[in-house]
Length: 115
Length: 113
Image 1 (cartoon, rainbow over the protein chains, first blue to last red):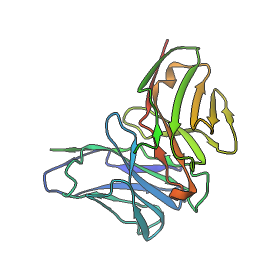
Image 2 (cartoon, chains in turn red, orange; image 1 turned 30 degrees about the vertical axis):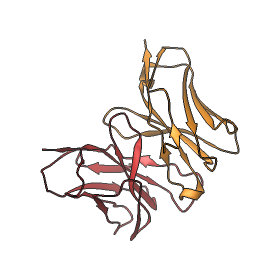
Image 3 (spheres, rainbow over the protein chains, first blue to last red; image 1 turned 135 degrees about the horizontal axis):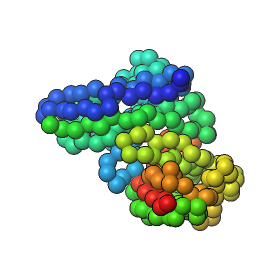
Image 4 (cartoon, each protein chain N blue to C red; image 1 turned 90 degrees about the horizontal axis):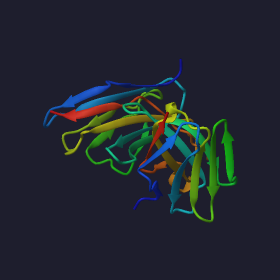
């Protein structure tokens, strides 16, 4: 049963705390992405990775960090530097490889709230 | 600068009728367009896509139309069903941006039975 698994579904962060959101895929996709969704807004790209051990900043990378040590895993850390972390976070993956038809497939999301 | 715009925040349609969701873009380099459907507290699900070399793509009840000269695309759902009630996002990509997707803000579709 192939897909993208995000955990946890709900996460609470205390002031000054770093938290890590997990994203795992078993689709054998090269590319992975992290988005943030705020109410009434579209998805905004935080970080993306086209290949293992490489990643690039998206449009709103400040206050976030990622790693891509394994093809199937792309964890996102929300650091204390992110002053407004409350949002719905979505992980996605795609075949990648510079293909023009870049269909991204999404996980179920993690809702992060600040205590 | 919003490169992909969905100007209608919401749309209400009667069951069995046609739903038309619209999307405009500003970057003429976009060459691939996608529609996603999203239920609350879930991830978006890919619906249908279209390449800039085409002006229409159909998949069952869903048809996407692309008007490159107007930089406009639309998603038609016929007939609309209550289960179609969701948020619909259009997205665009170009090789210039490494095929990253640029999303619109979404349109909430409500299909009334």
